[in-house]
Length: 246
Image (cartoon, rainbow, N blue to C red; front, side, top):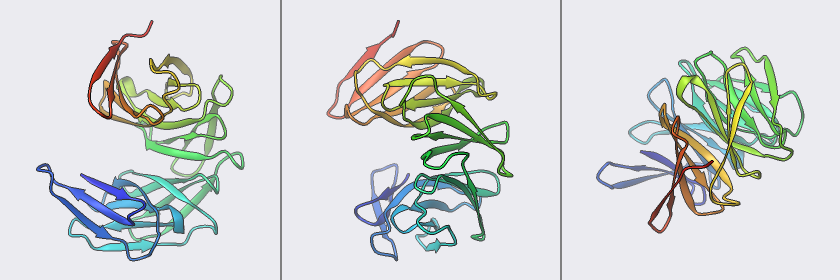
C-alpha cells in the first residue's frame, strides 16, 4: 500500500508484513496529497502546495510535472484507462494528465465551487464533489459538465465512491449525512450518521456493497453495508459499535 506524507514531504510504502519504506520528494515542501494507481503501473500523486502532479515507479523513481494554470492546487488524483484526473479546489478546475505529462484543464461551471474528491464511473464520465458549490458534478472526458445541487444548504460534500448498482455515494461534511445518487443525477436518498457532528470526509468502496468513510471530527472510521442499512463505527483507539438507523 502506498501513501503520502504531507508534512514529511515523502511518499511511503508499507508491505503486507508492515515494513515501511519512504521516498523523499525532490522539491521541498511539495505537500503530497492523494495517490492513484495509473494505467502505466506507476503511482501518481498530487503535489498540492507547489501546484504539480508527480509519479513514482514501484522502484521509487520520482518525476514531477507542471504545466498547470498559475495558483492551481491539485487534489485527489484518480485514474482511467489512459490518463490520471484530479481536481483543483482553488482554481475550480478538473484536469487531466496523460502518461507522458500533457495537461488539459476544464473549469467548473461556477468559480469558487471547490471541486475535491473525484472518481470515474461506468457511464464513462468523471463524478466529483463540489464542496463550496454544494453540489455533485459530472463531466465527460471531453470536458462537458453538469451540476446536481444538493437539497440541504451548506452540506459541503467531500468524499465520493461508486457503490452497488453503479450508484454514486458521497459524504456531506456539515450536515453529517451520506448521500446516494444515480447516474442520471437523481438524488435517491440521504442517510444520517449515528455519531453527531462526525465530520465525514473521504470515502472508499472496497467492494460494491461495503463503503468506508472517515469521520474526521469524531476520530472514527465508519462502514456502511449497502442494502442492509447497517453502520459500523470503529474508534481510533479500538472498540466497535453497530447502528441500524431508522
